[in-house]
Image (cartoon, rainbow, N blue to C red; front, side, top):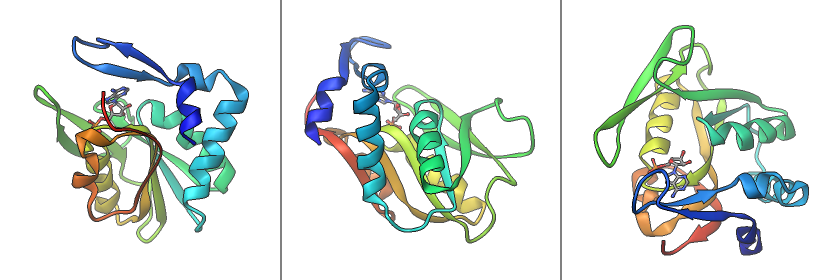
Length: 173
Ligand code: AMP
C-alpha cells in the first residue's frame, strides 16, 4: 500500500516553517487512488461498527465515505464553537498552546461500537482528545484508523489503550 504514497504531495513549510505538510488533495482527486485508500482502510477493521467519528476536517472526507460503506452512522468531532447543540469538550496540547475539540452530547449512545477516523496521525494529541470525548459519551472504541501515520512522532504512545491502524507510514520527515 506504500504505492498510494505517490499520490500524496509533501508541501514544505506549510502552514508554517519546518512543517512538511502531507497534502491528500492530490490523492482525493484521483478516483482510483481514493477508492483504493478507502478499501485499504476498511480492510483493517472488519468487525461491525455502529458509528464512525470523523475528526475535523479531513477526517470527515474519509470518515463519511467509510460510514456509508460500513452502513454506520457518522458523527463529527469539531473545533470549538462549530457544533450548534449541547457538547462535550476536551482540550489538547498543540506545539504552541492548546485547542479544544467538541462532540454533540447526544451523538453516541452508551455501548455503541465506535471507529475513530482521521487522515493523518502525527503526535496523537487530536486523536487522544477524540477518544476521550467518545469515552465520555460511553462509546465502545473499536479502534482508530488513519490513512497516514508519521511514525517518527510516536503518536501511538498517546493511544496505547486502543487498536491503531494506518495504511501509509512515513518514518522520517
Ligand atoms: P496530531 O494531533 O499531532 O496527531 O495532529 C493530527 C492532526 O493534524 C490531523 O487532523 C492532521 O490532519 C493534522 N496534521 C498534523 N501534522 C500534519 C502534517 N504533517 N501534514 C498534514 N496534516 C497534519
